[in-house]
Image (cartoon, rainbow, N blue to C red):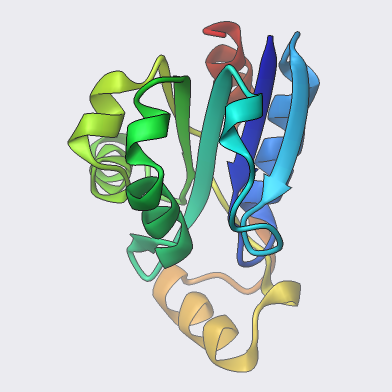
Length: 156
């Protein structure tokens, strides 16, 4: 079976999650950053996994657009959806629900909340200032959950 892991990332967390996920999959896996290739050929893949991260409470607009434009194709494939976010519990679940349509969530074989990161080194001055104040942090923070990534991969 062939699997496509496609994602968008702003500061690298979703990319890191996609790479960790690739290492746990038993299939032939291709990873594509949608910022670099917005129109991958989905017909080549049996399974499609889509991931993104939360910024200012929302997933990247490009992920939403990709899902809308490819909805019919995605509903014919084995599908996985993941999200990188710093929220936990019900708040994280709400962000996942807001990120992906109900139709995609209901069709998905697996849905994953992989934790998140604040990488201050990759943020611009304004982002860094907002995150430092809002999250009350002064250094990089990683809550990337490898166990959740492993559990997600095991469903495929």
